[in-house]
Image 1: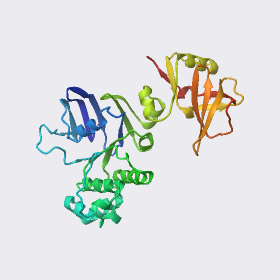
Image 2 (image 1 turned 60 degrees about the vertical axis):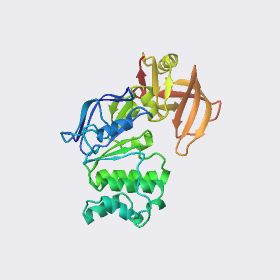
Image 3 (image 1 turned 180 degrees about the horizontal axis):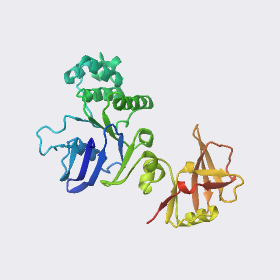
Image 4 (image 1 turned 180 degrees about the vertical axis):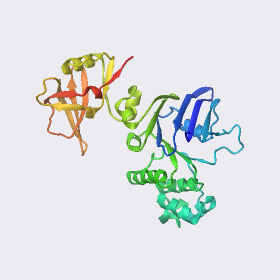
Length: 329
């Protein structure tokens, strides 16, 4: 039995179909990310799972019990599903310990574990108006988790956080799953926040799930340019450039266009089967370089740890067939 089962969800807002036949399952302790552009339906889907938005058709089941939407329930929400929105609020001018005591149903031992996991022990005596944005978010999260739910939904939790607070929150979310054994689902558009954490990623576009897979599958084999763009830089080669690449590498590529990630290209010195290019620009990013090279009909971005290149240098590029994503119109 899956922890969560979402079946045939269709939802309209102001006459527009925002979610279109959404179906997926989530196993207990499985880490799931819902990814997509702004306006794609990610937050609405999360709210539907939480019982805060009412679909016109379909259903959400948590441990085989229906999650009732707001049209069927006086107080929206589900006791075993916690939802942290982007617009969370805390009572003003109260001490943190007062805010948490008000919502607390845990034993002393459980509460101490929760505060430790959320990295808030040192904040208990402070007033809520004395907290940073990242600290306020962790307090709001701890208040939600005081009911010890089975499923935690996080809507863009890393947005508007500086590097330090983002790093802390990432550790908190990992510990919520590992130490508190609470299953987590999050919405995010930042590949650095999702690829290293998720067990599975659902890509949503215009209210539809267009791809579902492991982070490696989604990154290495995106179904289209939209999906590729969500998870980092990429090169899109048109039909003429694809034909030139295929001829240079002695490959058979019949696609209208192909996608290749910058790091998939290898800079070759003596390879006979390679694509000739000329360096246009070199940019340094600390642990790697990005080299813009000109080929017939356009430019490509190549990522490499080698930086001994200058504008005007002639280089030769190769790429493994497995790293070439074929796109058909």
